[in-house]
Picture 1 (spheres, rainbow, N blue to C red):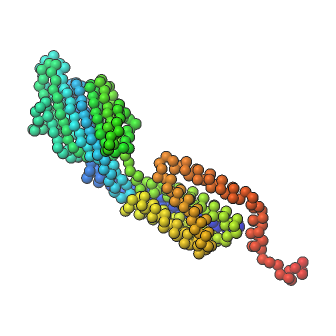
Picture 2 (cartoon, rainbow, N blue to C red; picture 1 turned 180 degrees about the vertical axis):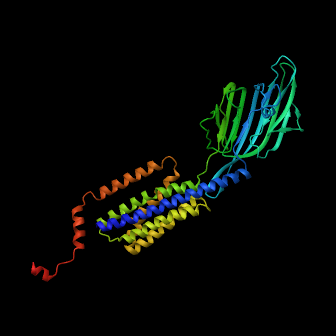
Picture 3 (cartoon, rainbow, N blue to C red; picture 1 turned 60 degrees about the horizontal axis):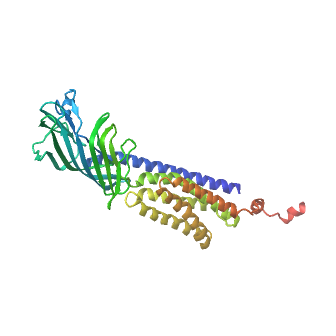
Length: 412
C-alpha cells in the first residue's frame, strides 16, 4: 500500500511540474505577444485618447508660448458643451483581445473677453494623439467655418478679436478611433470649468471609470448602452473625466491561471479515485493513474494552443470532450464500463470541467474551488465513515504476503 501511494504521489508531482512549465510558457507567450501586438494594434487603429480642453490666452497661443518657454496669461472658458459617442469594437490578436473604439467628438466652447479693452484672444486646441486620424474635422468661430487651419505642435491655433465683455462661440468636431480608454483633460494642475457639460453615449453596457477620474453626475440607460453626463456650474478640478472600455476575456492570461491551478483539480481527482478503488476493492495500478493524469494534462495543453485560433468557450468545451473521452475510454478497459462512465466520468466532469469553468466567473473562482473542496471532503467522510481502515490495510498486507507451504507448517 505504501509503495502504491508513493508511486501515485510521484506521478502527481511530475504532472504538476509539467503544468507549471506549461503555465509559464503560456504566460511568456502572452506577454511577448502583448508587447508586440499592442504596438501593432495601436499603429493600425490608434492608442488611448486624451482630449485636452482648449486654452484661451491673452498673449499668444499656449502651444507656441510653451515651445518658446514663455509665460502664458490664460483665462478660463466661459462655457463648455461637449458630446461624445463611443462605439466599441473588440479586436483579437493572438491570445489577446484589445478594446478598440470609434469616437465622435463635438465641442461647443464659449470664450469671453474679461478685460477692460478690445483685444485678441488666442485659442489653442490640441488633438488627443499626434499619430492618429481625424475624419470629418470641423472648426468654426461663431457661424464662420475656418478652412485655413494653422496647426503647430499638434494643436490648432487661432485668434478672435473681442470687445470688452463680449463673447464668441467656438465649435470643434471630428471622428477618430482609439483603444482601451477615452479621457477629457481639464489641464495640468487645478483648473476651473464654468458652465461645463459633457455627455458620453456608449453602445455597450459594461462601463467603468478609473480611480483617478471624475464620476458622472448623471447616468441613464439607453437602448444600446448608457448616456453619461457631467454637469458643473463652477468646477475646480485637477483630475480627468475618463471612460474605460469593457475588456473581453483574454485567452492567454485565462489559460495560464487555469493551468497553474490544475494540480489542485488532479489532487482531488486522484484522492477520490484512490478512496473509491480502495473501498470497493477495485484494482488500479499506478500506471493507470499516470495515463489518467496525462489525459488531464492533455486538456490544458490542447487548450493553450487551440485558444489562439477559435473562441475560448468553444475551445474549452472541445478540450473537455477530448480529455473525458481519453479517460473514460481508457478506464472502461482497465475496470468496466459502469465504473468508467459513472464514477470516473462524473469525477472528471466535476474536478476538471467544472473546476476549470469556475475561472470564467471573475471574483468567484476562489470561493467556488473552496466550496468544491469542502464538498469533496464531506462526501468522502460520509462515504468512509463506517470503514474499518485497519481491516482494509490488513487485508492489503495479507494479500501481499506469500502463502505458507506444507513444509513450512511442519517445521513450525
